[in-house]
Amino acid sequence: MGLSLLAYALLAVMGIWMFRARTLRQAEPHWLRSLHYIIGVCMVSLVLLLLLIGIIGTYGHFGRLGQSQHLWAGLVTVALVLLSAGTAVQIPVGQYWARSVHIGTNIALFVAFVWVSLTGWSVVQKYLP
Image 1 (tube, rainbow, N blue to C red):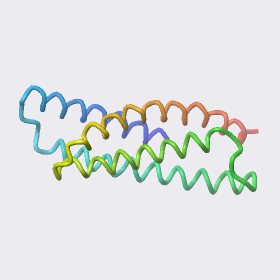
Image 2 (tube, helix red, strand yellow; image 1 turned 90 degrees about the horizontal axis):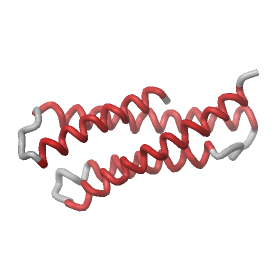
Image 3 (tube, rainbow, N blue to C red; image 1 turned 45 degrees about the horizontal axis):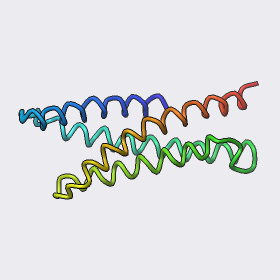
C-alpha cells in the first residue's frame, strides 16, 4: 500500500507541475508526461495487485469476503484508479472533457486512499495475534 501512496503522491506532484506549466504557457520537460504515464501504469498495477492479495487473503483466512468496510473502500479505490487511467488515455486524443474528469477523479481518489488506509488498519489488526 505504501508504494501505491508513493506513486499517487508522485503523480500528484507531476500533475500539478504539468497543470502549472499549461496555465502559465510554459514548456514542460519532455520527459515529464512519459514519466507520469509510467508511474500511473505502476500505480494501476499495484492497486490491482493489492486487490488480488486482499481477496485471496481474506477468503483464505475467513472463508468469505465482506468482513469489514475495507472491501468497499478497496473496490471504490480500484474503480477510481481505473477511471483515472481510462480518462488519462483520452486526454491526448482531443477528448477535452477527459482532463477535468481525470483531475476530479484524482481528487476523489485522495479521499478513497484515506478511507482504504484507515479501514485497512483495522483489517491488519485482525491478522495480528
